[in-house]
Image (cartoon, rainbow, N blue to C red; front, side):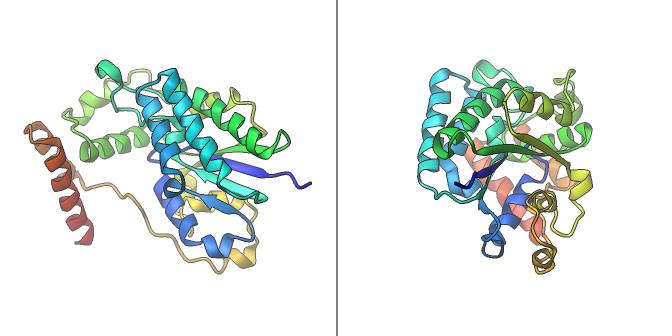
Length: 269
């Protein structure tokens, strides 16, 4: 009986995850003989449940995540190599708020219980002999938290300037250190790391590191197109506009729509 190899890509956020997911999804037909890839759109319920648990870490929220993940895994075939890519598998992005306005300052507190459920669900579905690996995309700490801030300014009602925001994370760990600490608690068969600084400029973008890990044959990779960028951040000028809009006290839904329109126009231009 062939052992199933499962690679879980649990983020982190703002480390090229959207670009990787978009690229792998678009090349699915070519890569199907070598890997079955499931990204964000494949398991929306499980991904959303993981994010909610990151902000509301109650036991029943964790059970809701496990139920959604079990249902997803029951719906997919027994392929030899499977990749599950969803950054919310590490919880909520730091900078978001938990109950009572408490700031999410780390991944580990949510990512470890989520990871334990992921590993247990995969072994229940594919057997105790399944090869379960984690693959983290990472980024230098200060560049990463700066990108997180830019994302939050455009996506939620964040009103702090960057220096004020950054000061709320006096003990911020480097993503490489935190991911290694999380993985060490999950009893995985292997753990892999790739820095955006190293793989982001390659022809396939951040997906290049995953393609390396999958040992995609060179003659197949030569046929793959160059990657574009996904979820690109805004300019400094647009970020300043978004911050001013956040501080103006507009309706949150209308504000989000207006920012989305401005961002689309800027990207089109």
